Image (cartoon, rainbow, N blue to C red; front, side, top):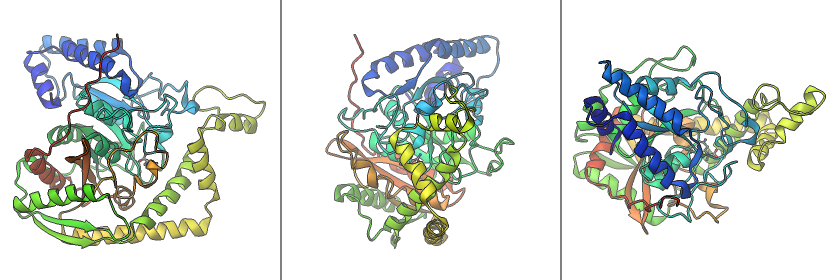
Length: 471
Ligand code: GLN
């Protein structure tokens, strides 16, 4: 059931919030084979549900997400609940407050059901590097759900909860959404507050949303967006009508189908992207092919900039401020001990970040400038661009190389600070394919119009594996 339907039932009183959450907890239990959960507290979730039922009984109005179970990525602060971002270095860190987006979700009536498994500190594309162990793809348990918000995408795809909130720096919401056959939105930077999000690369980090349909995506975005005094980079609510955008036909929408020399997706993935573009064309959109060169260079630039910013952000992990106190007689020894808790990938990126000198940093910034200009140039003449979300369908868990090119098509929108939405469109060998729509800054309306039109065409997604309850 969609988030909107659940909330409507709870508001109308045909179902209690407690009932909704009890059922979601049973599904969470049944989804144990996915290893997609970092933490959950059934009693707390039920207490939140009871509070909603009591408010309704007292005649108080309930919000647009009344009683809707949501999954939070393990890098979002929820007051008093351990927030480790799947890293040993943050074990024992209990945030003093909740992230702004989490507070806004609760104010809309949402109930936090669980925290999703992820790659340590957001670094990865497979949800394989986590202190909780690897998560699995509900469409095929031998495959990865993608990452770093892999637990989130897996739980939404398995029908455990209709909404998950993650973070997307280079693709961490879009890529797992693509591999799990669900919707993932990286909104325009500034729309969603990052206050209470464990940072990776601050210039590109965004909070993102994962759902099973475009309406829930819009509804969830709507309750979270808007200026936040705690995050100076946030902007006021745009004068949008997302409800109108979702119903509008894509007639006259100018769509650029990206041709990316030097960056190829698997032919069967490209075929689905072309099928989506053709479907939009049939519905009245004006589609033409546009060239975007330099994706491999953009990926290298993303890797360099991400490492530099991550190394700088992680310098605050000094063994005194977060998590368990580190061992050692002086500050230096404690910092060393704290850093020893990082996993291999985090250490590798910190080293890389420190090794990148001014020259290489400048070259990465120049490459970022080039891809940004090219994308903005195309968006001068197009309402949106369309391309694959990932070069392949979900990788097998034993394929260590798989994550390497996973961000090839997602990094450009991150570097350019543009919004991008991944939606399921078509199936290859029983696995979902993700199509990516990239829009203008604050151009989410066009993304929702196109996504809703394609969704209405019944973009087929394979049924998730029926995960058996534990006995
Ligand atoms: N896979 C990318 C990386 O490893 C994306 C990370 C992210 O968006 N958090 O950097």
